[in-house]
Amino acid sequence: MKKIGLIGGLSWVSTADYYRRLNEMMQERMGGVTSPRIVLESVNRQSYVDAVIERENEVEAAGIIMDAARAVERAGADFIMICCNDVHRFVPAIKLRVSIPFLHIAEATAQAIKAQGLTRVALLGVRKTMEEPFYPDILARHGIETIIPDEAEKEYVHRSIYDELVKDEFRPQTRARYVELIDTLAKRGAQGTILGCTEIPMLISEDDVETPVFSTTEIHCRAGIETALAD
Image 1 (cartoon, rainbow, N blue to C red):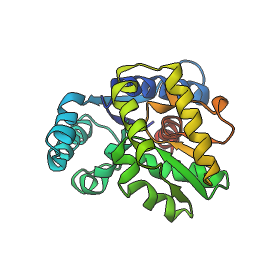
Image 2 (cartoon, one colour; image 1 turned 90 degrees about the vertical axis):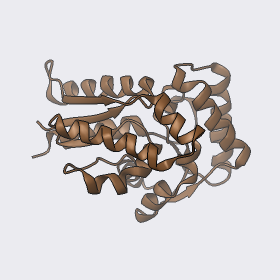
Image 3 (cartoon, one colour; image 1 turned 180 degrees about the vertical axis):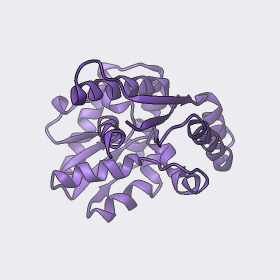
């Protein structure tokens, strides 16, 4: 069994969910009380936010993730999973400076969407996820078009994540607003919606909406277990 290197803390809320789901999936797959081999480097989210938001310093932010990647590499991880969508924008640069591979969340998500035969999906997440090209570019390579919310919608989603979800606050009124937004995006042509922040699946599930939603946490964790057990 390969050792999973998790980079977490971005936020602790979704990182805890990753640890739970990885263990549940491994037991479902292998039986008994089998647990995955995991090493976790938990980043100080405040330091990361200060770099990205307060100082708008992408180089500093990437350095924080680079240090975390090297830490799990030194700890014997065989591959790296980042428990956060938007941080994956740094993967192309960081992967050149570590010797173990990244399991990219957008790539795993694109494969899951393609498996369902969808060709046009909406993307929800923090601003960096919705506005940077890394998701649309990867989806496009799989023949999938990306629909991005408008400015007011982006601001609401971004703010709700920063002000509520990463603080472990999941409010009924926020859930209702997300359901409304997903329905609106479906009317604009989205065949499904990527829950492109690893806290959003803790707010919204497929039972809440009429169109498919793709939990990036669930997809990433399942890909992680498959990778850990692969020959």
